[in-house]
Amino acid sequence: MVGVAVGFGVGVGVGVRVGVRVPAGTYPFDQVALPSLSPMCRFPSARTFSRMTNPDPLVSLSERLQSLVERASAHVVRVEGRGRSPSSGVAWSSDGLVVATHHTLDRDEEIGIGLPGGETTTAEVLGRDPSTDVAVLRLKGGGALAPAEWGDAPLAAGSLVVSVSRPGRSPRAELGLVARAAGEWRAPAGGKLDRYVETTLALRPGLSGALVLSAAGTPAGVATAGLVRGAALVLDAGTLRRVVKSLLAHGEIRRGYLGLASFPVPLPKVVRERTGEEVALLVTRVEPGSPADRAGLLLGDCILSFGGETLQDPGELLAFLTEDRIGDALALRVLRAGEVRDVSVTVGARGAARA
Image: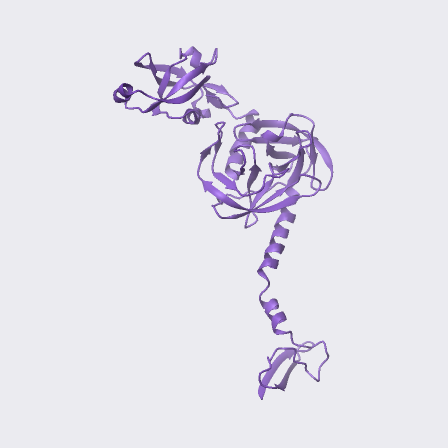
């Protein structure tokens, strides 16, 4: 026989100690009744006791995700700026500013907005940047919104993320992973993102403009399907702050431009030996009246370097044309009719990034 001693409290400040003897081999906590007590005073079974002390991890995860989505949905609005294909937006400030995605907006005025509480209103575009796919909207009459509190911790490959979009009246949530993460990245249109973050989030209606949360529940960025075909990227918080600030100040992202088009070509052996360069950018178009035209660049010129930096891809040329270079006179080293010459060009300004 095995002796079991049990201590518990009844009422307030009363201690009772009861001795119960059960047959050997019986689990001490397996619904052993206390004969002298109410049926309410039964010990939990071993399984119930285990659940009480060690909650099911899936249940805990589900409850955690539900809580994250519920809180985040207060920051997310529906954006109706392109036919019958609604997208999402995230409250940027309490006075009615919303961050959305450029590629989902076909117009700048009378954009339908569905608010978290179910009300509807309209908005206008204050500024947009096609190269980073960021647009800033202002709600009609301002409106009171709950802005997201952005975090700065970088998302790493393998991290869990949660997207909260609003393709209809109610929010839509999805769990995904960060598939790839890297440092500063230049988009195909020339826009600079502080970090490249690619996710496994499905490209469903309303995803662009959705709020992306880290596993800690911190707003980490805004989702977009408009920069890389077939991929859901995250516009990180650092990029958003920088681009939104410029859009509010200028309505666009001011970038330098030269007014030319080019593509890379391999150089002949004799030229490689003379210049030390393997590749040059062949000029295929010069925009009339552009900085390149005023500097005397011609079709067929091969650009070897710009501002002392060698170039092997048109994207590298775009990367040099930042806002702080506008107005600078820089040297373009070109190969023309077999001769290497330097051409001075003054960088112009244009909102849409073009080389």
